[in-house]
Length: 191
Image 1 (cartoon, rainbow, N blue to C red):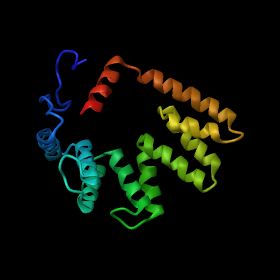
Image 2: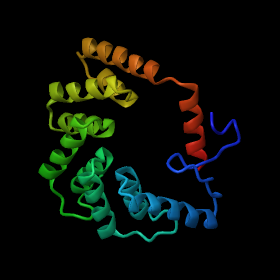
Image 3: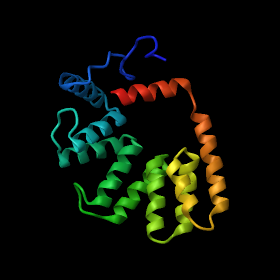
Image 4: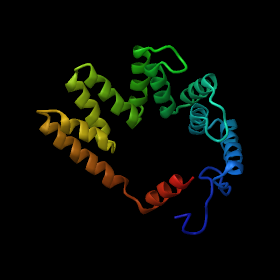
């Protein structure tokens, strides 16, 4: 809606967004750091992700991203909890530790992180705990995760769970439908 009115502003501070080039990277980084200084957990998590991927002109820094994710998690970012869990699962930045990975992902899932819930289902499925996997996928499907619906569909004998997950997913998608949300997603992809 804001873009239709000609506004391309930061959703936090309403400052016009910078261009999508090297000079824009510096401006985006400055805007992000301004939110980090204000202890915004989502901004702190995003800055950690930028260090992880080496975006916005930042060099990959495995120590810095984990520090940022830890701080963001302490401030309430579920995505940061999930990122820490993934790091423990992959053995990136920290020693590989499945127990810690599971703990962080479970905590993120319990706080509403869809990706964490989906991956817990995958983890249980790899261990052969298909009933637990389906439970996780049903929850994430009800939160709007299409891949969870597909995973349930692939399991032989899970027709009832599949139908329930499909209905839950459809309800979640219907509840999330919004013209303004679609416009915001389009703008976000352009950034």
